[in-house]
Length: 163
Image 1 (cartoon, rainbow, N blue to C red):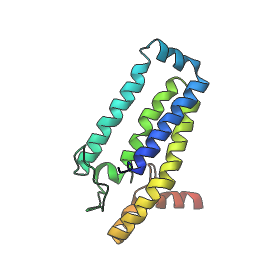
Image 2: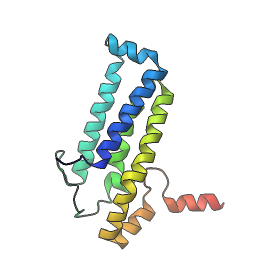
Image 3: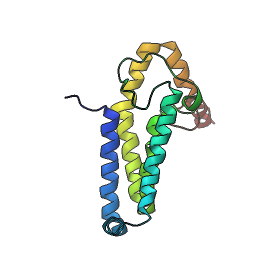
């Protein structure tokens, strides 16, 4: 039996933690679960949006949705969504976590912060080391040009902080 990819574990734990925090902070969520409410469509919708976005991004990478290519990277994808963020698929998981803001913005924010921190330490940094080893200068150029998550590239942040 193989263990699922670390990113799936981090995502699942983050979603479960956000759900528990939202239940504790927002009694309305428990009431909505007990007597199904149209508000639950928000969670279903964010989940569907997430799956659709991942399918799109995997297609951008040249992978099928059911692709289990967690082995050696064969090419570096730096165009499309990957020109804006080095991790657009991992960013997509923020969408279902944000859905909890309907009940508790604090729970949604805490879940998103937990997810980003855990993903950075447990998944993204090791993946970046593997990509740097596999693609060398090509990865280094892309990493300098493209932010890990989203926003201004690192070199622009460096210029802003010096001003």
